[in-house]
Length: 252
Image (cartoon, rainbow, N blue to C red; front, side, top):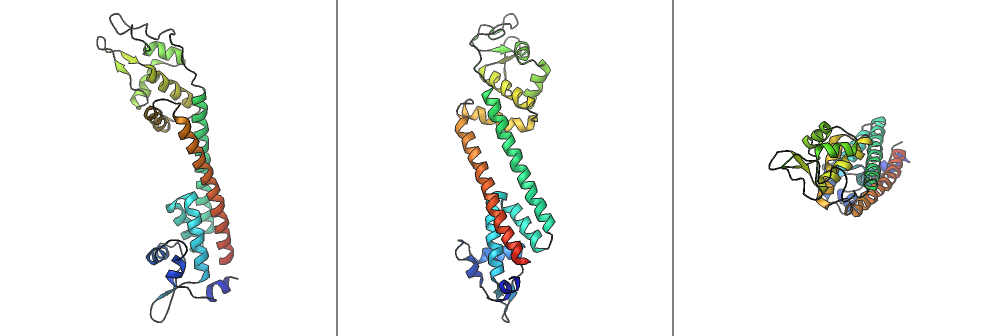
């Protein structure tokens, strides 16, 4: 089969490009990048391809949605260089990243479920501040009561602030940190994710999303879209694997 694919028919760059919405220059670029095997040449120096090149092109285009252009390129280059184990390693890394992304999504969904609405008035909320401070303000609290509510040390809240996860205001009279309802929400979400083993640098973009959405509720649609994209990526990986397996079979 391999000999038949490589020698039974000569194809031009336009023959490969047609049907994929590609330019002939893109086909030549793919060859130069190692995505396609080296082309043959006519006596006049024109490139000639075979059906094997068409199978390689289909494999690459099928790999891109699941692995991304860069990784798909590295996979095809490894295969064409005979380093199949390296190609498998790259595929394994993509699957591991997908699994990690799924776990992150599950952790965020779990943390948001655990964010039950805080009582309108609880110990430390709007009280417990130093004399002359904004203790009468509704829905605010200070570092001590908030740390006690979460079961952590005040130093931990200061560390989270330094990492950009919290942004409390300062009492104009005392300079003490004042946490409003949004700060309390972010602290609780951070606490849940930290309990799930996530690093501060992993949590920061999630907190930013919550802030941009105005709270966790609007994130439900975003989380649904995130879940759908992960599922689509997993399905694309299966499609890419099938096409790559076909190409490996034709190469022999």
